[in-house]
Image (tube, rainbow, N blue to C red; front, side):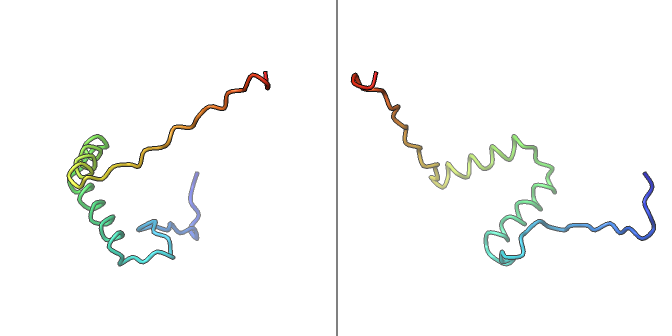
Length: 78
């Protein structure tokens, strides 16, 4: 499939939405982690270990989901 001369390739530098503030601390952290991940060529498992360690060091845990109770039919409904 040949490209036409008038077709231009657009390189997307980032996928940050236009509404978000690119200078927010969170966006700066995302850029920093992205840069370091690419620089050191971390694998998925290595990154998973890093973020698991960060959560443990900062005492961050996911909120536990409440277990839903199963609606059992009463004797009258059977």
